[in-house]
Length: 245
Image: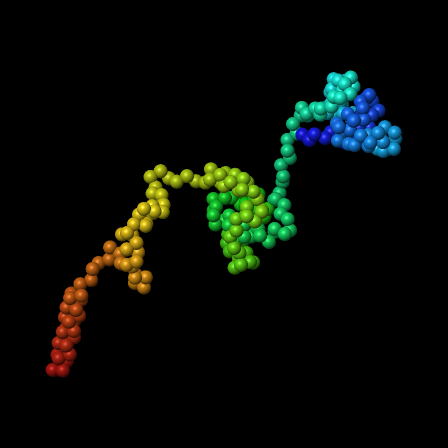
């Protein structure tokens, strides 16, 4: 709760009219200048303002006022509210300043690529967009798809890092878990990918030639040519028979 009472001038009017507090005490409590409180007492300021009882509104206790009246050096202390008012939840998409709205498609593309498990509602909360826009960027039917560049929404100032982390964590909890026993594809460890054998094998490959698979049968050139010669011999015999006829 703020240290300033509700409606300071109206509270000062009530304290001037209903208590024996000094101008300095009222000014310190209401966050006003002592001369302004003196002008209120003289009727030169706050004319037409109805006084607000701070005891009735729960901002001061009667014991606190009596204690301050007996001790001119005592400063009134604002009493905290006993009722906690829940903060109203914001409805609808987040408001995005006009200067940042052209960055939203880039942020959506970044979220779609880096966090595909995130739901549309979460993206809407983060960058303040709509479902049709998210769908168009996912399907690459957005009018400016060719010029979009994935950009971190935190870097663009569309949301805070804490908000992004919370949504990512929530999306990870709702993501389907892998089936037990199903192999999980992972990257090769650094030790294996940077070993001498792996580097030598990578540089020995000819990119212009297809990779030969172990399953392919080894072709015997002699057998192929022998078969071709036998076929050629059969054709020659057939031609000789035709000539004799």
